[in-house]
Image (cartoon, rainbow, N blue to C red; front, side, top):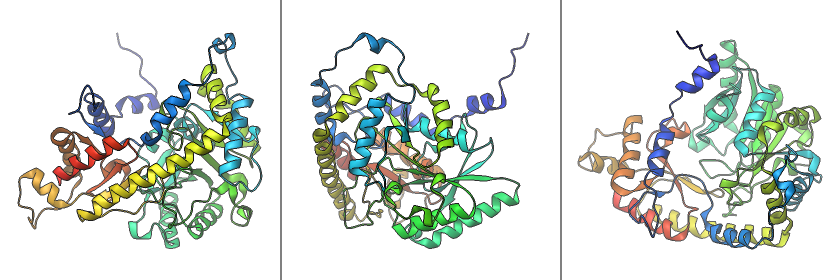
Length: 433
């Protein structure tokens, strides 16, 4: 007897063996703990805001939210009106929307991962392309492709052009190339502030992205998950697309969706809460509402978070504290890289620094002389260095290839960890250099 075959999509999912997940499993098998495992691996790879962890734990433990009978029942799949109302209030206070956002303008999901997947389902047929500037957030191929089967398509932009309008030529070329192969592009996905670069796009660049999307009749998904984690204000300021009073001059607003959530700005990764803000397209909003039952959030969690976000004074103060802590941690991490003459991208928002590991560190790993002229970064050496850092220095940082970087030797270092762990991580990195 033989078992029935999986669907094409099921077979593809079963065969997807991500090297990144292997690295994460290795990290989780030996995590650092100052009391029980001080020689364990420091996690300087996952983007989590550890600078406000103690503040959040204290606040959550002091909320008067005992279980009640209704917590044992189903709740509203798109988020309760009370929770959506508090999220909308947070957006109205901090995103400066051109028009106030109401609770019926957004859908709450169990994480932005699910919101991205829902948008891929709603905007793409299987095989359609979603363009993303690269390097890019490493989970997007999974989010967009595993079940929705949209094709996350990286558009490689040289680092020196990330802040320039001329980069649009790379996107135009990609659209033409896909069309030449009979494919179709349905959306442009932007992370602003950018992951993994930590930069914000100047308004002039965002205008050209919008014009490009309008020319090709594309949806624009603006992932603003790090919007309230700005810490260096002498760079391009962050401006949510929700705040553009002239948005319709560049694109039909119905093509624009904004994403945000709890994981980054609010340090609540484990709560798995995200939301899609869709104030200008009722049909798209209706599609997301139809998908919402697949993204239910526990009733108790919704009630707890409603109470947390109803304390506007605490939320606003916490965000100020977070930005100050991020600024301090970033300054120390950037200073470390300056002192050790390590190339990096100056960040202004987010939780990480994009830096290029000196080739001398690779030579040290291989036992070569530091000035070995024939040594250059390759995909294999970059991955080997990642394992070497974990095995020999108990330090985890994801390699550039995980972010679809076309230039090898780059790594993303998360500095938004607690202060004690940051100091240890920098010491271990120094030893590796």
